[in-house]
Length: 140
Image (cartoon, rainbow, N blue to C red; front, side, top):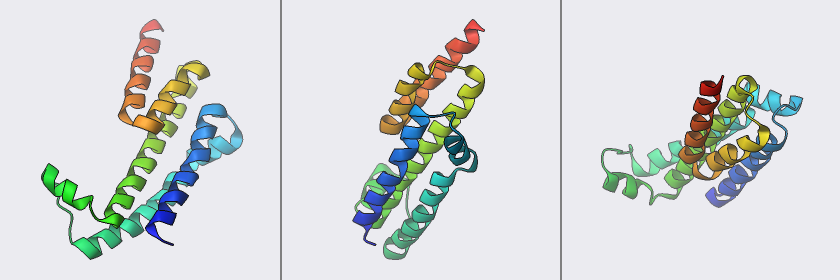
């Protein structure tokens, strides 16, 4: 498969999981996928393959400066690996938030912006969730 095809496949793989986190977080299938981290593990396999290809093509990666990282992200396999990295870790944070909410019991409608924010803007959704978590704990 080409990197473009893997990019599309990775995107299509996370979409149903995010939908389950938002719409059916307590469903047994969703819980199974969260508990065993199935989707992030699949993404980890693809990440490993494409980060390996990037290293083979471009040598060891230099994260020591912004210019080095910008140069790294001109290599297709490195960009794909980076994208998969974002998808996997944002999804793990979304799963963690759903797990945290089992105890917190934040209303599901209030969780939607947290989860959508994490899906679209990573740290923004996480920060929103942490703010809600803090408020919830202060009220308890």
